Image 1 (cartoon, helix red, strand yellow):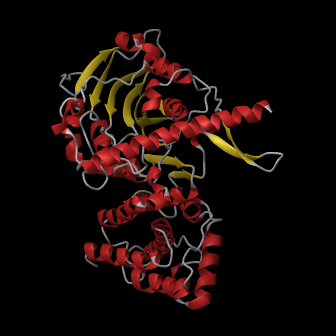
Image 2 (tube, one colour):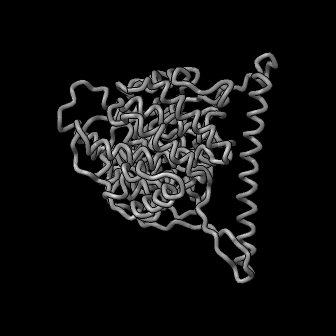
Image 3 (cartoon, helix red, strand yellow):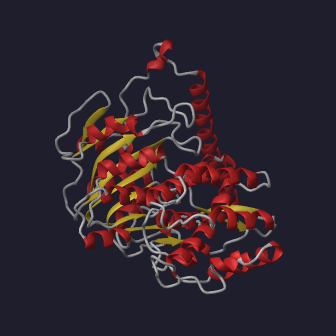
Length: 493
């Protein structure tokens, strides 16, 4: 078995060679996903595992080893197309798959030198998982790929899971699962328990974790990420529903926990071709009987969807942008109903500069679903301000788990009903919240030190990054306004 660090270096070095041919990080990870799946499926069918073959003969790993040149390229394309029609995890991994490696010699080297020479099934899940997570993170950092919106910072995910403390008997869902960060962190947290019995271990591997991802390419990365971390089986039912829009309908299933960071961008929309041949984006207002308000605001719809997904007394942690906390109209309706029908107990105000997508000002809202009641379930909301006077960037000063330790301690997951206020952690009663204009939950109280003392200003790089984020956010808002005006003009004409 190769040293893990040497294996990582080998894969990265080859990635750079393929990038010289115009292959993006995303394309590389995608091709690696197909080939790793085939190799691991082949290893599982051999000693010491001796499991049934799940990939049809002639489309399996040995069929790639027997070919080279144009014959290999043509056969690889056939493998991708045929396996994309298979059920289960096979279908999710290979659905709509394409070969992005145009040089057959480089494809041959990737197959025979990099992947064939390693026994992947013998590698620890931690090693395989860390390797793949590193590739996904690099892809998220590649601004041109746009993959950052599918990648939530791992320190934030770990902190959220740390305070939510999922248990071995729970069912955990992420309706916008991206590359699977929340599901993997929950799996790792539960796996730490040395007293898990065989039934609990079985439930954790297949049954406890599930998700939905609308983008096929991202769903396949998620499934592979889960497999490499020891979640699910290549020949089993996929825990990820790929290519499905979570907001389209109530799926019917209920879960004890939902952890999610829904996609950025406020409005759901569809592109239609008008009579003049021009492409026009039209807002899609989601209308569902289980929703409190009908709106085209994607974030508000996800909040309502999460509430639907929870079983009674189920718990949720949802990453939401600032507009969900203060927007009027449907936003106010959703907030008031959420405060009444759920116990909305904690809000974490996140600092800027922690997401790969620029211009994001976000928060994490924690709430529990409760039975129907005339009295509001929310008694008090505790707000932790990690934004004011905090300056982070993705490279010079990235957010780490240590930066979130103060929040984890303040949350007090052992007993959140015995908390103490501090400079950054304040308590607000239900009456105070409901009396605020539009039930606005965008609450802050700390003074920005940089407004009073120039010596407390962050470094020029951080200031520049924060200005860029603010401009990105403003541009996104103006784009939304422009789109709405264009839609109104189209409807009127």
